[in-house]
Amino acid sequence: MPTKKQHFVPQFLLRRFATRSGTESRINVYDVERAQYRARQNVRDVCSGNYLYDTDASFEEFLSEHIESPVGEEIDRLAQALEPVNSVANPEFLRFLMVQLARTREAYKNNLAFMNAGVQTMLAELARLNGLDENLPSKLLLKPSEPRAVLAYLTSCAATQWRLISDLKLALVVNDTGMEFVLSDHPVFQHNWYLREYDQLGSASITVRGLQLFLPLSPLVTCCLYDSSVYLYGKASAGKVILASEDDVMTLNSFQAINAGHLLMARSSEMEGQLQALGMKYAKTRSFKEEAFCSPASIREDGSMRSLHVTARRQIQLPAMPSFVKVKKKVKRQPLQCAHRDPDLVLYQEMLDKRFR
Image (cartoon, rainbow, N blue to C red; front, top):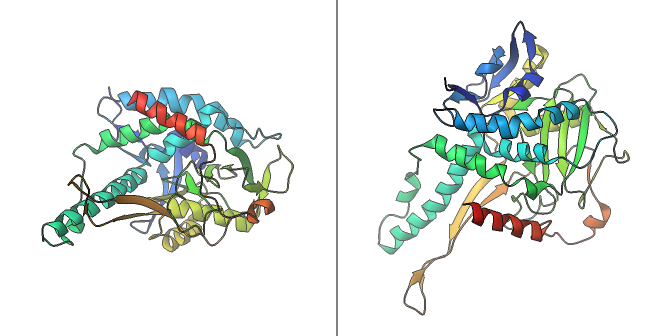
């Protein structure tokens, strides 16, 4: 019988932030949208939806077999934060990260907003050229007739793109404070601190210099992937875990709150106040904002009429990074450079995409 309740954050990750209650796992949830705290929710009912990807469970089985099962042991190992730490992440973990970035409801909503932002500039220009109300297109939104097919497509594409982050180094941050790392329903936080003051397009790409990815693995361990040509992570020598201060934990938890679609989660009931505070503070904050603009249509030499339309994402302006994240001194002395970390790898991925689509 097909699985009716399908998860967009896998249960094996949710269980790491839950407590056992008989045969069940229970997790404490703060619903940001409803400003409501719900204690001891069954993990089976959290970050899930009925027939989220399909009605025959074929895509759910694909995720289980090719994404979740292969990475289980690696996440178990990383969550123990044992030294020495291998700074090179394995392909299974990289694939899991890319898929997790794409498979959530928040990711679907953001991609739909990106698409609509671009379409609306096209419709507005058509309206202008025909003497119609240019504001009318802003009231029109495209909505796929089969959202789960779109979500499954975005997720499957992400599974093939793990090589784009294969150059990033891995660091493990251990929480030895009285607080916990929390988890959101869109748990992989992406940011480029190096390009925080870069005012041109491109800083939101996963291929550019300065990329960082953060994923909590348990209340005690967060995994970071970062561009080691730009950042120095911690003062410890290679292979050592990084100990987080209380301020670091609060900063990393704020990343989850900024990224959250609707839910923030924690293991301990003592985190209720902090979940509520995070949810209230960042309820209207988003990691990225979609922007779209175009040039007025003009007549070309061949008689055709063309206009240039651009859609992009701009990242949030964060006030600070955790204390262990430092931009290297030699990088600070150089002009900002928004460029691919590995142009050849990007070209290779583009060739793969064209071949298999």
